[in-house]
Image (cartoon, rainbow, N blue to C red; front, side, top):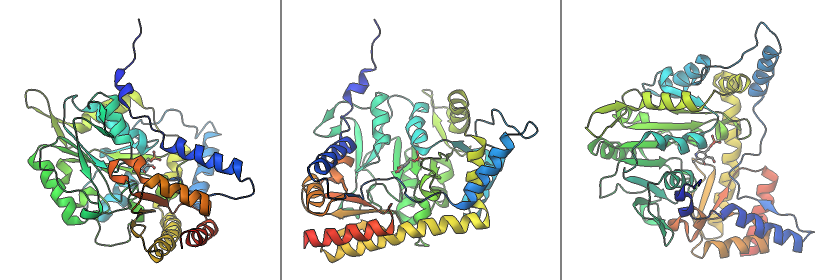
Length: 407
Ligand code: PLP
């Protein structure tokens, strides 16, 4: 008899986005003349930078000719892209990362989700709350947690991000083995200082642990003192894996390209205490289960590292950050405290009330959709996330409506 992976039955049914969709559809059906503005989504709205489109067209033309046609490429990504990433995202920031430590993929979601495969079953996890759900759910699926009791999985050390700690979790008082960190954060938009990241790296080194650092939103950092990469911290090369994506940097959510950095010096241990480089394990996993990102997409991604590409992606992220600034100002004027939006495309509002109730108020009174914080974890209760990914016109209209509804 075929049987299921029973760990899947432990998953707390993720009703967040379907619940939102249901409530929005019900509202629209009852109020067909009212136009709803969605400020809840984490997807971009603006088109690809022209340099990416041109590079993709040119690469597609190459695929049309026998002389330049390409079949399977290297699973880890073409050298032209890995070298450009190493040079522009790392060497330029003083980080020692080699091109062959970079694994190009079709998305950070897959990489963040798949990475746990290379670790033992009985490791101790440290996972933020609120959280991008992929880190937690993939470990539940793999059987690394107990059941869900009162909204939390047994056996996980939760890293609480609250108003009291400025939404940057404190170092746990207990030892853990695999630590997920995300800065700039989704959903809170909080960033971690050099000192805070240094403390995490020291903790990981002391405990022979590994940090999984998700910096999908690094392109939104404007404060020059905030590190863009965990490798800007001394010693991180021995204890950290980093995830980056072109999704929010250059509008690639529908185009799909990302990368994971696994320095050759990061190790984990076997039962006998022998160290094994994770680079070799991830390389084995990646080449066995993945067959490379499409050539035209990698060409489009590499184009963002040209001078024109840098200007265009900066203009794109500046555009969303200008939306974020308008949202922050409007939220503050209404008397709420919030975080994010200055180095991140998300604004995390401390509503002081039930997050679904606040969601319903915005939907019913202002026809604006936000994301209730409770959907990201226990510590998300009392908060909502507003995203800056929208047109200026929609943001301005939404803010005017919110101000009218809440005043
Ligand atoms: N990491 C975080 C924190 C995200 O918010 C997202 C997407 O929303 C991803 C990773 C996934 O990005 P990708 O589009 O590369 O799969």
